[in-house]
Length: 306
Length: 306
Image 1 (tube, each protein chain N blue to C red):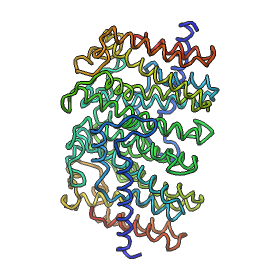
Image 2 (tube, rainbow over the protein chains, first blue to last red):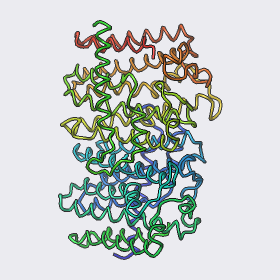
Image 3 (cartoon, helix red, strand yellow):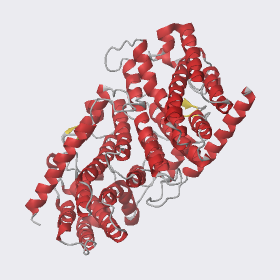
Image 4 (cartoon, helix red, strand yellow):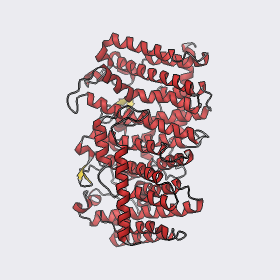
């Protein structure tokens, strides 16, 4: 598939995600709720709307398409994953965490609002993600909805994303000396960013009720893509220009963060990234040209500039 | 039922909850996870183990028993709700929120660990709650697990508990003047504490697959009990002795918090609490003596000293 066609599909998915997130993040109460506070919803919308490549929901949507999933199911599952991604950015940006003031070229939530509001907005986004997945509108079969909830909870929790952020803080030396080797950095990254990216792929297979062997290959794809994404992120931070990236760059080295650029050197990190892209593409060998968009996505995560 | 027998049942439930939470909050990875960071799990255990009346899971367990639910299902659903309750305490205690140093007679999580760890521990507990509910071990039927996830997400989210905490911060005047009348305070309390307490009752009816009319009466019971609990909490803060209560008291007035004691006066608040207990008990009129434990629970929330 032409890179241009890939960009169109990525953009189309991003627009669908933006519209659906906006519909989800309204002030109105739904059944079983009371009216949502205006300031809280403003902060949640600030965190979740108007930006980002929407790579995670794009992966869910395209994997879902490959597996014959209902379009609305893949979109809603992808939006739930994006809500979790956005909540994690809000909390990671907090003063006691990474203390960032700019995100996607705009003030972070605690700068635009205040710290307490940012904590609650993150909590609200995380909770809403599970609400979206458990809703009958996401999939007709309760077993599928349950598998989505369980999978997202494990990818996002203490043995996944939250645990990865904990490792990341520890790697800065906050809680005593920490000199991480390459295996520990890979484990940290597999948890902090890899788990959710891999689950974004798996969620597409779940809503498409893909057979076990297809799911296994897609799991390999998702794990390799997630790892490639994070090495590319380390390289972007090392090489990047903060105006283009839309957030502060060079901060990893300044914060003493554990990155694969530090562990392998820039050339070693580039080689590792390329090998992971190859691995992701190789895992799709059993799929036909209908998987070209996922092959292109694996290349994209390695070459993106933001 | 004798008050003494009630205390025994409450204590028995608390012990079962403590044991099950300890089993859930281990360092080991489960399928689909990586090893959970030790410091994070220490903080999560600090937040969730070794204290509390476990009133919410008690309500789920006893409502489940009344509705013929499998015991393990009610216990696990109750534990998930308790995880959400514990996460909310960790985040509410943070310096940018209520800035509390003591909880259940022990240092709050951000005092015992640090602020970043406390934020992540709260995030981990919230995420784990949905993991527990979505697990097949909670209930054989996926529809029941889905209803539990959806119900907890709505009770805990922006239109429930998180929204209530946002209203509570606003009521302090942080974001501009805020003079709340009694209706606004009742709305705030119905969201901040009422929604989760009411859901704890509903969760018992869900795991017991109670018929619609029983569910409706139990919903009325849960809403009245939740409201009574919060008025009693306001009275405890007003009258209480911080050594007995295990947390700082008198802080509501100091922080300019919206309470029903401030709105109705202490006598008015006591009368309102008694009326809510009567309403809760009246809603159970269709149930026989097997509901005596829930009747006793409604009385208990009004007279508890901690």
